[in-house]
Image 1: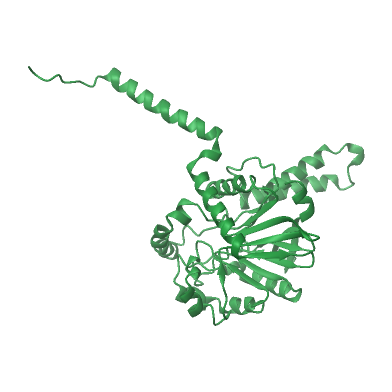
Image 2: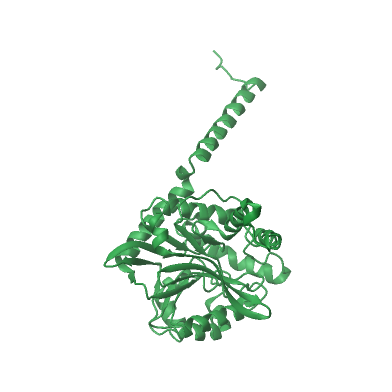
Length: 378
């Protein structure tokens, strides 16, 4: 008796393909409705929960009203070659350091200060000794350094002692920092500062692959002058990661997260672009008898600023964020020489920008609020 053979006819093939496609679409619809259940979100949640617990046990600082902090991240100081994006921001950053040193601020560098994935330590560190010397004025009492995924080598103690001790003797690199905001003798809320790559597939879990690939990409940039990284590149991936970080911290009580990594300034969980759109809408809602004399000029100016910000910080996949718990420093490598950061001073928090205005390097406050008001809404 011959064994029965099954033939794959066109009808069966189409039914199978349709069933498979239906399963994929159903799965996609489920995860689109429940983004908090996606794999990448769960990875970020678990990593951030673990790091918050570790940092709370080892790196907690009491934040009193008179304390002053400025937070910068993502300089990516390279070797002063065509792949180095910090060069155009160097003078802006040095001017900012002078300002904060003279006013007694503590400098927090929140990761990716050096570009050590595309460059060797031996190439990157000597290239910016002048910047290290400026930062060294804050050491040891007013300098806190956190490592990120692009300068993750600074978690190796022997490398820190060899390359950083000449500038910052005995410096300790942390993975994060927890500031306890005091309300009298009680803790009114907490601020968790971390670079923000924790839990991501490419920058954390598969970071060894990035260490292998990026040096070749650096050579490609130098030889072709193509693909220089800017804050507007990979905007969808960066805004998606902002969403992941927001979803994590929005589930916490009385906790503010300050991160870097995505290179996009975020204030009270909203990008500066979103805040500008809200301000334009508020102006347009004003009744005619309440509009200022320069109303038309304000509208034109606001629209122009929105257009500029759309180019500089593309919105891409941003979601509606209702809790003002997520903040991002932005970066110190914008193509126009601007840098952004966050100040914490006198019980308040501000998103600031440094850049050239009328020929001089000047500081601008983009957004500001009291920490008390923010914690009341959390």
